[in-house]
Length: 260
Length: 264
Image 1 (tube, each protein chain N blue to C red):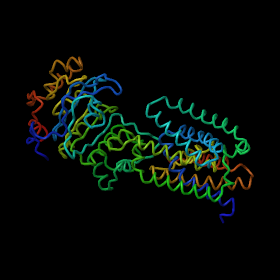
Image 2: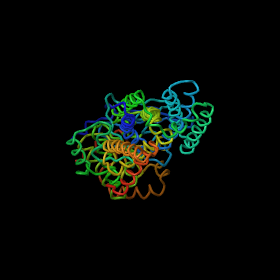
Image 3: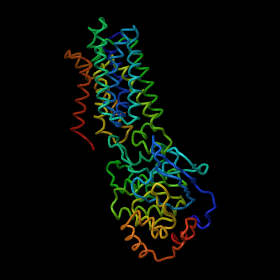
Image 4: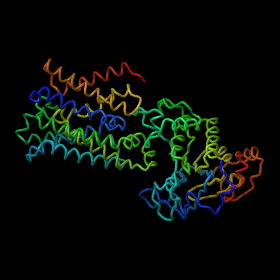
C-alpha cells in the first residue's frame, strides 16, 4: 500500500494532523499565530540554505526554524512590541528566503512546492520522518501537558506552582520549529500556520476542556487532510491549499454550530 | 479550631524578612528599603499602601520570586504556600472548567475538588467554564485552588479587585472562616481600608518602607497612616471606632491573643 503515492500522502497528512491539533491549540491559546508565521516563513530561508550547501531540506528548515524560534522567544522575554517585531521578522525571513532561493537554479522550478507543499511527492523516507517527528513532539507535549497548560493559562499561577514559564515557552517554540520542518513537504511554508491555527480555532467552539480541544483539533485536522486530498484527486486542485481550504470549511461550520 | 493563644511572638515565624531592600528590575532604584517583616502561624496580616508603594514587590520577594538587593528572607522549612496573584487575567482562548482548573498543575480527586468548592462557598460550580463566572465566584475559585495544597500560609494580592462592596465584605468573611477552619496564616495586600481594618490581626502600612504597623486600631490612629491615606483614613477611623467597641488596645504587632476571643 505504501507504494501508492496517494496513500503515502494521506498517511503523511494524518501524521502531521495528529500533532498539529494539540500544538495548534497552544498556538491559539497563547496567541502565537504570528509567531507560527515567522517560524514557518523562515523555513524558506532554510530550504535555500539546504539546497546551497547540499543538505537535506529537513535539516536546513529545522535549523533555521529553531534559530528563528529562539530569536523570537528571546524578544518576547525582553518585552519588545511583539506584533510589530514579528511582522518585521516574518516577512523579512520570507523575503530573504525567496531571494536566497533564486540563487539556487535547481530550486527555482520547485519554489511552488516549498511554498505550498508537495504532499503527493512524499516518499517513504519523508513519511517515516514525519511520523517519528510527530510522535516525538506529541510525546513531549503529553509529558509536559500540565505544566504547558498551566503556564498558557496564567504565567503567575504557573510561577507560584514552581513552573518556569520561560522553559515552557521554549519547549513550545522548539516543538513548533520541528513541526514546521516536518510540514514543509505537506502543506508548504505559507500554509503551515493555517494547518496549526484553523483546526484548533474550529475546535474551540466544540470543546469544554483543553484536552478536548486538542483532541477535536487533531480530528478536524485529520478530516481536513482526507477531504483536501480527495478533492485534490477528483477536482485536480493543488493538495496543500485544498487541505487548508477544507479546514477553513470546518471552521465556518464550527462557527455556525457553536456550542458555547 | 486551633488555639491561637499559644502562638507567641518569639515562636517560629512562617516567613521572616530582615533589612530587605529591593530594586526596580534592571535599576538601582529602590522599591523597598530596609524592610523587616514577619508572619506567624495563624495570623492575618494585611499590607496597605498607595499604588507604587512596593506592596506587590514585597509579596514577590517573600515568595522568593524576586531577587533582593540587600537583606534576607527566611521561610520555614517545608512551608506550603497557597498564592492568589494580583489581577489574574485568564486567557479566554482556553476552554477550562472550574473542575479542570482545580487540577492545574497538580491533579486532585473529584471529592477533593467538590469539598474545596463547598468550603469557599461556591459548591457545584465544577462543570462551569471559568469565563462564565462572576468576579466574586472567580475569586472564590482561585481561593479554592490555593487551598487545595493545605497551605500553612495563604498569600492574596489584592484579592477583591473588581468586586462590589457586599462582595468584598463577604470575601473577607470567607478569609476569616478559612483561617478559623484551617489555621492557615493569611498575608494580604489590599485597598479596601475599611474591611481590612475589621478583619486583620495586624496591618502593615507600606510606602517604600514600613511607615507604621501594628493592630488595626493602632495603625488607623497613626499619623503616618493618616498622612498617606488622608481624608479616607479619617473617615475610616471614625467608622472603625464606631464598629469596634471591644478591646483592641494592644498597640504592638506581637500580640495576637485578642484574636482567639475575636473569632470565638
